Image (tube, rainbow, N blue to C red):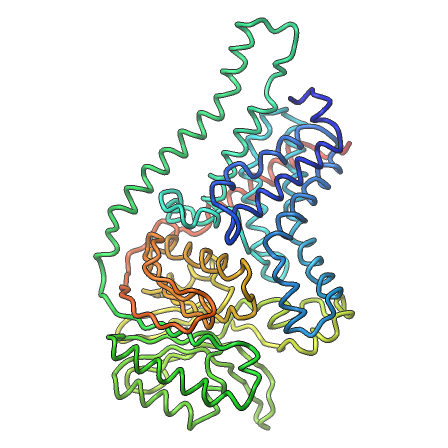
Length: 528
């Protein structure tokens, strides 16, 4: 209860904040379960019922630190193994990222505490709105943000709930999930049931009143689940459009193998062999992973000619990832791009897409002066430039898009592709960096949410897995294990119908941001 000394004690509040962080981390794969997400924010929200504003900010930092340590722990391994950093330096760099991510949760906690100071337990009703605003901010600031493990992604496999993304995107799912935690917290910190003045009948009335938010939210969740289950069961989009059989190549090439120049030819030959096999199995469109070629596609004419020959002979387009260099007139390299090339069925280049959202500490080092102590990382990380065009690539008479690696977790980017004419979503990635951690599983589920949002099939080729296909309702049609060579031939469809989300985008998230600013304005500027 709000008036309980136990809830008001600093130690207990930090225990509650830590508990929320643990529950948030356990809401995601590989070690968590989506059911946990529905209660994950409740302990933190209970803690935010009392105490000064600065403590609320610190409680949010605590929750965020645990949340992101539990979901981004794998970054330390990447920097030690592939960035040539001492372990202590890698931990420090990862801690800097985790601290930055935690600031968004701390800001959320600060605003919510302002609301509870102004309006009491009723102020918690604004928490889901503020949470979504914080997630939107995390997706955009700073420098493109880092929208990994947004709360709504926890429900990617709970298809009746995940259908809400077709209306309001992943942020809509986040708001729904956060609403349950909020209702439970409002019940927990409702009227003080220990008051001696409260008679038995009056106490029952108070309990019933406190249950109203819980009942209301559960009713909304039930309605969404029933609607979502019917939408997924009808699966109208799986019978629309033109079908195409897509071959997904998973070469399972370790980063150490790619660095061994004596292995490059055999890697390339293996991709050619698997491509021919996919075509024999009926593939009408073949996709290689990110950076699949051990050469630059535009510069190694002989190797590129072998790919073009397969496409031309089989009349099958091939999408592949390769680095791209933009040179000056003097022939000096000036810009490097992580790109995807589409080879048409006639063997010509149909177009190239340059990756727009680069991986921090993987493809560039943000704030190099700040991270001066990570000199080996700065030296080892390729200094890529970001593309600036959401290019649509031609597959026959249809347009497809490709998101490279982690940029598939950016909802607005994929929406730009669809608004530009993409009839099928593809994503290519090299998740070998992640090793046998939670990251490949988190990455795949986040990618699958894009299919629901946009009402498109999504096909994914990953160097070491998970490769697979997802239908427009989020059903996984096929998926490979990680760190095994694999070849999938799956049926997808070119679709043109638009979801509400594809047409209107993140209106809910931006409305939440505006309302959150209004919350700050109406609750005044007083700080305890």
